[in-house]
Length: 53
Image (cartoon, rainbow, N blue to C red; front, side):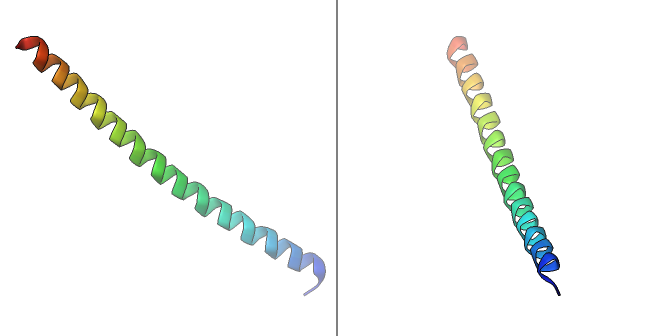
C-alpha cells in the first residue's frame, strides 16, 4: 500500500467519522425539536385553560 492509498483511507475514515457525528447531531436536534413542540403545546393548553377560568 503506497502513501497515496494510505492518505485516501485516512480521509475515508475521517468522512465516516464526520457522517456519524452529523447523524448524532441530527438525532439530538430532532429530540430538542420534539421537546420544544411539546412545551409549546403545553403552554398553549395552559393559556387556553387560564382564559376559560
